[in-house]
Length: 70
View 1 (cartoon, rainbow, N blue to C red):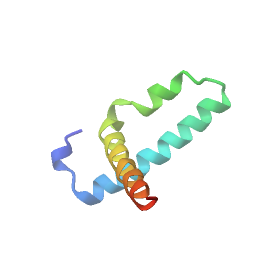
View 2 (view 1 turned 90 degrees about the vertical axis):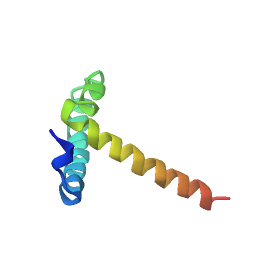
View 3 (view 1 turned 45 degrees about the vertical axis):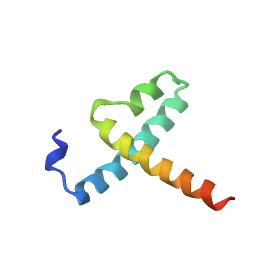
View 4 (view 1 turned 60 degrees about the vertical axis):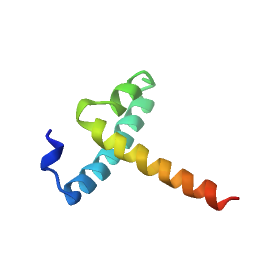
């Protein structure tokens, strides 16, 4: 995957789809009592870029929540 060829709309759609895929695969893994696969599910090769975006967005949300709570 070449991220330089992606536009904002594709990045948005792929990030949302990555979140949905991770949730579905984690639920299936937990139902099968297979907790060791969760790390593999989150860090699949095609998901690394989108996981980074998710972590950045979560850090902004936590930063603003912390700033408001003062």
